[in-house]
Length: 547
Image 1 (spheres, rainbow, N blue to C red):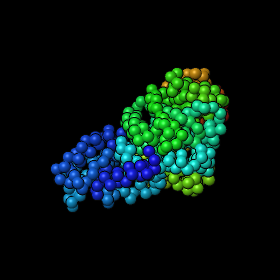
Image 2 (cartoon, rainbow, N blue to C red):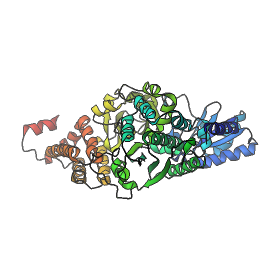
Image 3 (cartoon, one colour):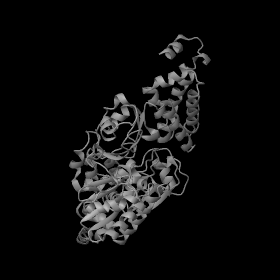
Image 4 (cartoon, rainbow, N blue to C red):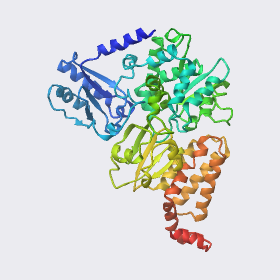
C-alpha cells in the first residue's frame, strides 16, 4: 500500500456514492429504538420506488441528538428526521419526490448542533463505520502515511506537544509530555494502549466514537506507535460495549487486509499491530496500572507509582496509555497542524471536549464544544434547560467529580476552572439535575457506586467508602447528628489523602462538593429531626442547625 493506492481507494468510494444519500443512525442508542428495522424499511422503500440508482441508504454512527432517535438524515438538503419508525420509511422516500413525510422533522440549525465544533466527531453520523473505504474517502489514514513517510518520530511528538492536547480521560496530563517520556525510554519493546474502559454513570462518549469511527482510533494509535517507537497496541474495551467491539474487530481486519496494520506499513520499516482486550466491567480498570494488570491476565488492581507506565508498564516495558478521545484528536492535529489546534479553546485547555449531556434536560445527546465554553451555554442554549422547573446543578466527572450549582454556570469548561470548584472534567459525563433532586441522595448514589467498585486492595478505599455510604444513609433516614456530619467530612479527608489510586482518592468528591454548595440540605435533614438529636446543649451545634 502506498499513497497513490490509498487515494485511489478514496476516489473509487466517492465515485460509488449516489446523488441522494439517506443516513440512518445505527449506533447503540438508536439501535435500542429499532433503528436497524428503520434502515431495512428505508432500503425496501427505495427498492419499491425504483430509486436504487439514485438513492443510497447508509447505516452510520452517532448523529449526536440521542434523545430524539432513531435519527435519519437526507443529503443534499441536510434534512433531519427524529424518532423515526419503520412505518415512516415509505413517506421519507416519497418526500424525495415532493411528497410529505410522516416523521417529525428536526432542526439542524438548532444551537444543539450549531454550537458544536466537531473534531473528534467530525465523521460521526456521516460515514459507515463498517466500511474502511468511507473512512479513506474522507482523508482517513493519510495522516499516518504523512507521519511515517514525511516526519521523524520526534517531529510527531513535538507536533502533539505544541498542540497543547491534554489527556481526555480525566486527569488532563499533557499528552505530548507523556509521548516524549515513552519515546526516550530505552528498550526494544514498547506498547501503546487505548483505554476504552469507560465506566462513569451517564457517560457514553468513548463508546460512541468507537462505534461510529473506529478507524480514527486505529490511525491515532498507529501514529502514536510510530512516534514513541512501539510496534504493538492494545485496545482495552469493556464487554458492555458489544457494538463497539464488533466495529473495532471489523476495522482492524480491514486495515490488516489493506496493509495499513501489520508489517512494513506504507512500505516503511514501521510495523504495528493492534489487539483487543475485553474487560469484565470493573470500574477500577479505568485506572492505568489496574488496566495493565488486566491486560496481562491478572486481577485488575492498581499498584503504587512510581514507576509510571511510561517507564515500566505492560510486561514491565515502557507503555503509552491514552484514552479514546485523546487518540481521536491525533489525526486532525497532524492534518491541520499544532497551531490550528492550539488556537481552539483556552490558554491552558486547548481544543475541544466531547460531553455526554444527560439527565433532566430537554436535549440529551453527544456534544463536542470548544474548551472554555460556559456551562450556561451548554445547559441553556444547547440543552434547552430542564423540562420542569429550574436547573439546580450539573454533575461532571462521574464518581470522581462533583456537583456545580446553577449560580456558577458561567464557569468556563476547562480543566483548571473545574478543579477550583471541587470537581473535574473527567472523561466527559455531564448530568443535569433539577430542583426536585436531593443532593444528599446524589452523593449517596455515587458513594454506593464507589463502594461497590472498590477493588479492596487498600483499607482507606475499601473501608472508607463503606463508612461514608452508611453515614449518608443515616443522614437521609434522619438518624444523624452534627457529630456524624463532622465525622463524614473528616473521613472524606482521610480517604482522599491516603487511598492508593485515583478511584479512592477522588471518591469523596461528590460528597465534598455537595457539602460545599448544598450544605443546607444536609443541615435541613438534621434540623427536621432535631428533637431526637443528641446536641449536648452546645450553642455551636444549635446555632448551626438554626441556620
